[in-house]
Structure formats: structure tokens, C-alpha cells
Picture 1: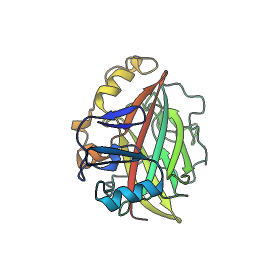
Picture 2 (picture 1 turned 90 degrees about the vertical axis):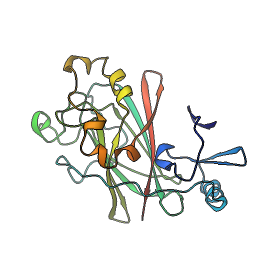
Picture 3 (picture 1 turned 120 degrees about the horizontal axis):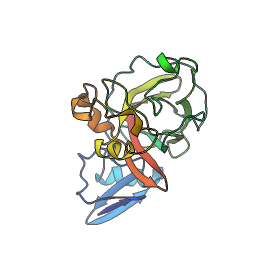
Length: 234
């Protein structure tokens, strides 16, 4: 069994298993042993041994709610209610698994009521649930937000763009398991909105690559921590 932070993986690790499942740290298994590392040196050893390889994270549509020039900040909640969600989003070279330092990770999503800032019922503000962070030496950008709400016609998701050297190298969407969303939505303020109308399997965007963009999520205290590693060509 491989252990990653607060998560465990009972299924065997193979070259086919994408690092997008493993939440930003390189995990390798060889000869029955396990290597867990968050540094470039350990990642390089894993690559050289052939025990692990990165994959290119699938591109998914930007959607209609992008606003350029978001604030550079970690906490994007602006006082909006919802279950605490901390995101650790890693950016890796798809060909080498090396972390990319200084990448600008740009996220935006609906609040617990299903509203996007700048649009519809959220038009009074252009900034809530939006923000940019740069990755550190370990390739990870961290955000503090709330678990996204649902809106008609879409599964629950977070939009993401990755910029390296001034160029957009990835546009995608991050998804949650339906089981987890069902659990989160039993609490306020989500419970008062009724049953959502779209699950992952029926979402036209999820079925075109969403399985490789699933966040690994663990419960920490009263909130959750979601992690993913995104392989890009920089």
C-alpha cells in the first residue's frame, strides 16, 4: 500500500496511473518497496528507474465565466459561506515529472449558491472565488476557498489555467467525486438549494477527460484538502 499524506492507495502503482491521481507528490513503487518524495531529486530517481511517468493533463474548455487579471492571493472566499476547501495544485513537466517553479495558477469557480462573480446573481462583484497563485520550488500553488456549489447543467467543478513564462500552457477543469459532493451538500448552506441536476457521468465536459482531472480530497477538521498534479508542456 502506498501512503500519500492522509491518503492511502491500495491498488498497485503502474506507469499507466497518472500523477493527476496522486496530488502533487511523486510516488513510486519498485521491488515491493515504496518511495514517497516531494523534491525534484526524488522525482528524478523515480523517473530514471522507470517506476513512474507523468502524463499530459487533458485540456478542457475554459467556459464562459473567465475574467482576466484576477487578484494574486491565496484566500479567495471574500466572506462567502461554505465548507472550507484548501487546494494544493502542483504543476509538473509532463515529460520529466520535475516541478515547475514560478508558474501562475489561475482558478475560478461558483460559490456555494452556484453563482460566479461578475455574472448573473454574482455580477455585483468581479472577484469572489477567483485568484492567482505562483508555484513554489516544489511546483505547488495553494488556495483557500469553499467547496463549490452547483448550477444548472453542470457537474461540480473548478476552472483552472496555468501560465508559464507568460504563456497559457494548460486550461482545464477540476472535479470531485459525486459521493463526496453528496456528503458535503447535506450541510448548510448547500442543503437549502435542493438536489443538483447533473452528476459527473452525465456532464459533457467530464466525460471528455474529467476522470484524469479528479481532485484527491481528504477531510481535515471541519473542512477538506484537495490535491492534484497537472502535467504540462512548458
